Image (cartoon, rainbow, N blue to C red; front, side):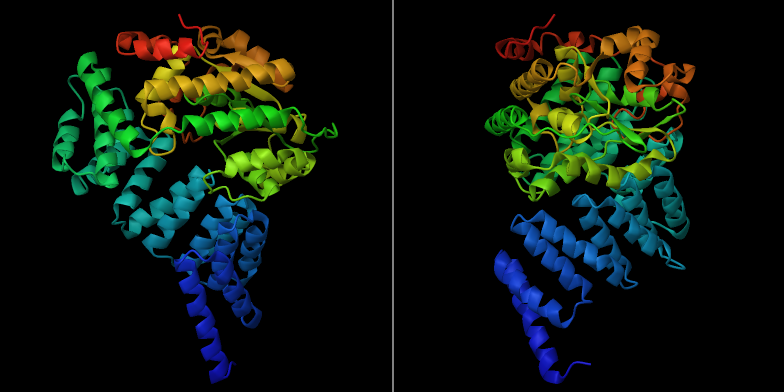
Length: 535
């Protein structure tokens, strides 16, 4: 028991730490919290605040250590457990986040909001069936927020339960008419037709949003509804109306999310420079499940290849996981949430122990293999990480999906990626981003000719059997007929392509940009200036 004087002193330390955190005085906050924890080592909120203060100063390893220390100290406080799980996940400690979920799962009669948080955490970890089970229990008890409705619909979508997803999204938009996220998913759940579409719903909701408002929330909602309207018109063959809606949506997104061309070039320069001086690592074989990396540009066909490959009896999909990126930041000891985090990590990479990077990655991801020999990590942006993968995990196959430049750029331009991808809302930005991608992959091919297998999207959809034989041989696997039938793969798919990849292999997406060729002429010319040949 603390004396009255000690309690007063601890209260002063808490107040001092809160004030320092609020003022962004991270070093001062760290000192106050360390003093507090010296007296009360079991104070989990203080330890989490200390981790935040350390991370804000750019020291990821030390911050992560504080979070890990908090796990065995957790009280039976659902909100606190959820907060710690989120922090651990964002810092690449997936096993720690799973431990928090296990703790949360021991609650005897959790209310709906706790079950919803569990579902959200399971979704974040890529455990979609577990998330669905928690959400089913939450729905039975009664969910009542737009976020819960939206997550409920997404989980149905990821599992291919389209009718149920559609019903939830309609209800969500009835209760929260300005919910742009729900509109985007609803438009993309199935092909819209002149006889059956949601255009009136989208137009009515858009009309309720103040057109003159400059708030980020209203601008983003308008952009999302315009994107949904584009999808309806495009599906129905009304291409001029579609393009007008897409142009309005992308103009709003450019206002919210300007593209940083100089930053992209600096990162590309740093990646190329670092790849030339990285230390060699041992070539010891991986003992246990092996990751297969699918890399490339977003919208290049990675989800289709993932579905085909993971329909093999010895392969499972891990989805688009961030583990390699986060372990890379941990090795560089830089926050993954800082604006220059990736650039700084790359600049520090020549001094990394890349074998340790591989070990940490395997430690955090192997549970995803579910008893199979291989698991697929299909985060497209890992195309930047090819030289690091080759040295950290030398026996892990890397598959590089390559799609026609105009097709892949148009496919990025037309999809609402939210606030994560500034490059995809402007034709000039798209061409520049593609140019940086081409610089990187050209360098990887020249400097590491055997580093990855090039897989043509056109070949995959036009000659699936020959292409998959080549892919499977490269991965050390025998051909299986199910790999030619992604529509038979019942595994969850948590990407924007989750609906399309549940169909048999088709070539309908080839050349789709041509229906907007006149409007995309500036993209074609901008790609040409980047030295990219287009048909």
